[in-house]
Length: 203
Length: 210
Length: 201
Image (cartoon, rainbow over all chains, first blue to last red; front, side):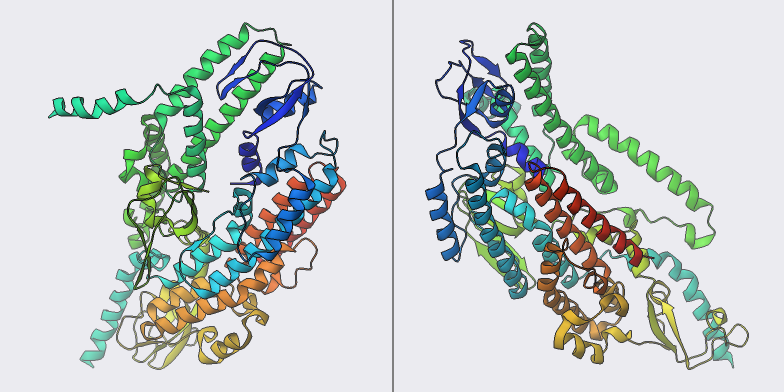
């Protein structure tokens, strides 16, 4: 999966908005009902709906509870001091941050929030790379990766899984490796051997 | 015998709540992610896709009743686009595997939907026939085609990231050369493991790939 | 599809290329009808004692015959094993053998008594170079290609995959902040791709 595909999943997560319009009808989406909307009264919608409404100046987006500077800075410290990955407030923390903290975001301190979240990400990814390396060196074919989020995994995939697969493939006996591409030809070469050895014997 | 099946197997279905469009969408989303990340082609979810396509058609008709500038119409259309993207991407991921592992999939065709099987047959006849024609013109052993060699099997030993939806009743066993390791899998735990040792659980949706 | 499998199957080009690397082979007996393999052979017969370097795919049809000896290609011999064990990451694998790992795996199949030694060497080398490869791939945007040029073919593909995942991510992260930085990233990526193409010639 690539970044955009994971962003697609993040867009399905829910967020609170404050509508700037009133519409008492419920919208029956396939993914669930949303509305009714009352100006000034918070309601919950999928992020993709929130983005669309906002683009049309129909709502303000409210930051999720966890998107708060003090909390995130605390999280950053926790992440730095832990040997393991700490649980994140959302499986899509990075995607949601990216979707909600654009340059003209409704959310206060968007810049600083973005920076702190990116710092958390960097700490986690550096940790992931270091442990990937240890894992590869140490051998073994499985490892726990609790609390790593999808986007982080996506970033780690080529360096860890591809290398691990390659290492494994090198070590296992190979039934159907290429070489056998040529096996069809072996008949004819064996013939030249037997015909070469026949005269030798007769000499 | 079939009476027994009717009695017991269908009873279970009756107990289930009516499946909502929302839950079908969630299942398709999960199937999409799994299919994208799985080394082999998974059992098809054609039924779900069909149900969803019907939903989409119905919704499209409803949306036509709305004014184009109506905010609700805009949101509905956007949702339909998103779902269509999802389904297209899901089906395309499957077609890619069907083409790449064509001969192998042909031998294990129970995972395919009828449409996919038709596609595979056409693909095979279009790809194998010209190759065979070409090889027939080569002299001697150079022209021999070995069907066994042309079969590319998915690498079930490939490593994957997996997350369990449930506490698994049995441990899973990871083979590493002569060594064997048992792992207890708890709900929501995440691991890197060889696909082969969780294959059955991915196929019955107890473990998802991430 | 795992990288290794993708590169090594019946229809794969890598597979054809890696099985074209040469293996030293000695004919302890005279062999008929193969004179054409050796320019200096008289007539159609390969004289006893002839040593040739033949492509791997050809060797696979010969090595089980009596009177044929297979030697290890130099990169898998003790001298290189020692060098690689000492500091694998400085070795220019690209120059040593473009398909170091995949060809090594092939050679291990026909040198049964060296099988495990070769496999151990391949795995150790891969693991020893991985950290460096990671560092390089992640920061590829800012760096020169010197390191990349020393990688064997599968390492290059690994590192290209990692770099493009990294670029995909940073482009996504920047996607709000205007065009200029994005263009830089793309350029760096293009440079990387075009330079890697040069080595494939």
